Length: 181
Figure 1 (cartoon, rainbow, N blue to C red):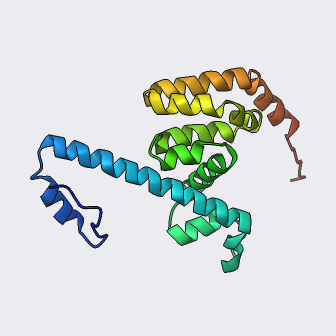
Figure 2 (tube, rainbow, N blue to C red; figure 1 turned 90 degrees about the vertical axis):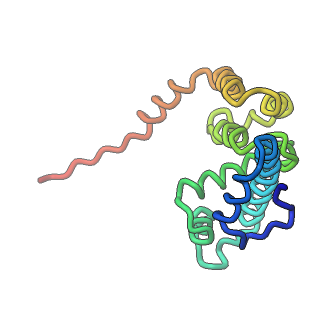
């Protein structure tokens, strides 16, 4: 017997483990699939909340100067996790179809993170929206490693001078100070 949709957060890990140990392999697979779809729905909802907090500057109510600081304090998470949440929120808000595909369970957190990484590319991220429907189809139907390869190829074509531009920007932004000792 699988967990019901009404399982409470108060149920302990130990109780859940004891219950799951009695299940056959097929029931464990079914529960993993069900939980993954639920996880995708919850994570996409979190992205919507983060987007709303950024658009309304709700994070300033508690005196935070950035949504990253607000997320770190509210969720007691690392800066890396807060930045990842913000990247997910941005790609779902700015690239049509990503949030809907995610909340419907068609794509997972890893696919969204891979899209968000490319969306954050300052040289070509703005072009991701033009290819969203094709990339979302690949995200849904390809194995993750194959999808990552598709994204790498897309990024290579969208930003052919990427490494050159990075070196050029580093040289341009150099700042040297000399102090008398």
